[in-house]
Length: 316
Image 1 (cartoon, rainbow, N blue to C red):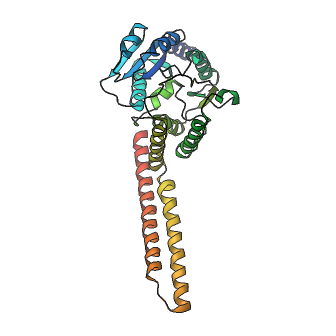
Image 2 (tube, one colour; image 1 turned 60 degrees about the vertical axis):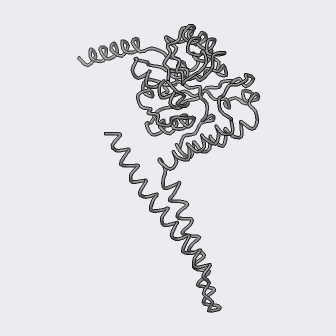
Image 3 (cartoon, rainbow, N blue to C red; image 1 turned 90 degrees about the vertical axis):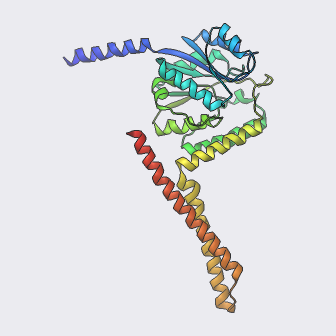
C-alpha cells in the first residue's frame, strides 16, 4: 500500500509540474525602443512573457503587445518595487512555477534564461541571482564608480538581511513557486531588491548565483540619476535594518552613547575631586549622552519586541 501511495504522490506531483508554467516578467517604464526585441528573445525560452508597464507615456504597451507579451499596466508610475510586486502577484494568480525577472531596457540578455531555469532545478534552489561579479572578466564593462556603489549596497544589504551575495542589486533573477508564494514586497521603489533578499533569509529559501554579463553601452537605460538611485536604495536598506534589527540600529548606538556619558561623568567627578570645580558643560554632556543613549536602548528593545510579535502573527 505504501508503494502505491508513493507512486500516486509522484504522479500527482508530475501533473502539478506540467500544469505550472515558466514566465519571463519584465517591469518597464518608457522603453519603446528596446522592449520589443527583449520580449521576442524571451519568448523563445518560456511559456509566457509578462510586461508590467509602470505608467509609460510612450508606445511601450503597443510595442510589447505586438511582440506577443501579456501586458499589465499601472495607471501612473508607481516605482520599480511596485512593478516587481505586480510581477509576483501575477505569478501567484496564474499557476506560474518558475518566474524569471529581467529588465526591458536591453541590458539583460534573455539568452541567459535557460541557465536560470537549469540552476533552479539542478541546485534545487528557490532563487537564482544573475551576478555581474562571479567572474572577474564579466565586470570589466561596469563603470568603476558604479562598482564602488554596488559594493557599499552589498555590505548594507548583508547587514540588513544577514545574507551574503556577490551582487545584491542585480535585477536579473529567477524564482521558484515556493519563493513566489513566500515573498511579499512592500517597498515601492528600488529598495525592493534588498527587501527580497531579507525575506529569502527569513523564509529559509535557498539562493544560488550564476555569472552574467550586463550591457552598459546602451544609452538612457535608467529613468533615475544613478547617485540618487544609490542613496534611495541605501535609505531603504537602513529602514529595513531599523525594522528587522532594531537593537543593532538603535540599541548598539544607544549603548555607546551611555558609555560616552559615563566617561564624561567620571571626568566630571575626577575634576571635582582634584580641584573642587563643578563643570556645568561636562554635566550637560554627561546627561545628554546618558539620556539619549538610554532612549536608544529602550526604543531598540521595544521595536525588537514589536518585530517579534509581527513575525509570530505572520506565521499564524
